[in-house]
Image 1: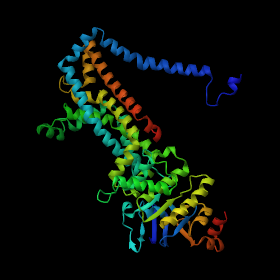
Image 2: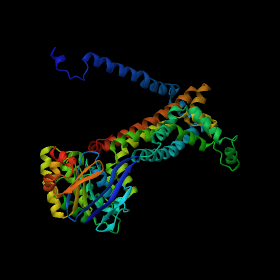
Image 3: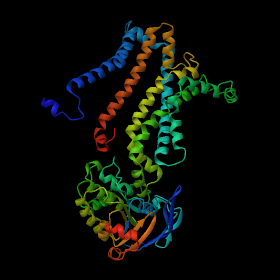
Length: 239
Length: 284
């Protein structure tokens, strides 16, 4: 799905989290929002997912105005920073949650839900953990379960907030490839937020560098490396 | 020598440990266990038959029924209000939040007698509203509605106070995740919020229930202590005691203590039954 961000701004009280920013994300792209904390990248992601409403500006999905759509109507697969798995449910029930939450008319049969959950567990290469609780999983397993849960609703796009932030360096490298594979298999338009420039440069097709609620530069990783547009970008990517 | 050398930094010496444990146990014996035993000893002083006879009196029976009815009405209502207040405070940002939290704590800082007087002044026959209510056949003061209001006022903070820290610690991420997965507000509440707070809620409800059954001051002012009609267990105990009917007074006191013990046993049973879930969710 093609996403267009048109002059979006966000005020929290007196402080501007986002000055008007515009950005076009082509269908099927894997985009990184890169910046230090307080740069507005997470706010922008939450606005895309419908968890936050912009103070002004529009969001367009495939050319249609989606600014007023509720979080449920957006159908965005969202992976939260600390994964936000439902701690009182098994992994199976976590992944099945979105399907069970559908209105009766479009809710799949029990057997069909089970089939889909099993398929997703295979996709994240953890076929045997359905009966476990989130507290019994490692950090990397939790992240993959969160990904499977987001994919279960057959989302129109995938939004990830610091998906590798809570992991140690080795697992981080493995899961980068995992996300890349899932993106390539599903073909979903994917936006992820990170403060780690290596991660952004290695994983994303397009990197959006942000600072202080503004977009500093948009470009392919190699272009940003070769021709940083502002002093901020130069300093940030060399850090 | 070596004992002292390898003791963890946070651990006391064996002597200090024994003294501290001894102090705690002694305090518990003197402050909790001895009075509880004394109540039962006094109640049974003239034999079990005398005690049972005093319970069989119409007034004692009416007091027990009234207290249970009051608890059965005010505890569920306060559970609902407490969950609503805690949910509102922890899941939304708004102006005046600190003020609202203070307001919830108000019953802790106001003497129950004062609370009772406030209800009498507001709804009593001397106020315009009270007179109108009495004329239309809905008396509040010296009747059940007044006792319920007084009990609810005094026990209001218990559930909310128990829930707010738990809900702050848990944050909003799980609710947000449920929303992105397509769940509506009610579904999120029943499937995510409520299961996550159920143990805190249970504790809050048990505390609230114990206090609701035991409340004396506010209820004494509001109810008028009419025997067989508006006298609850605590106010009846006081009246019997003033009349030197100590077997009857202590028997009723023993009943109140037993009701409290029953709630504790219920809690323990629930915990045993759901031990694995408790371990899985790291919550008690």
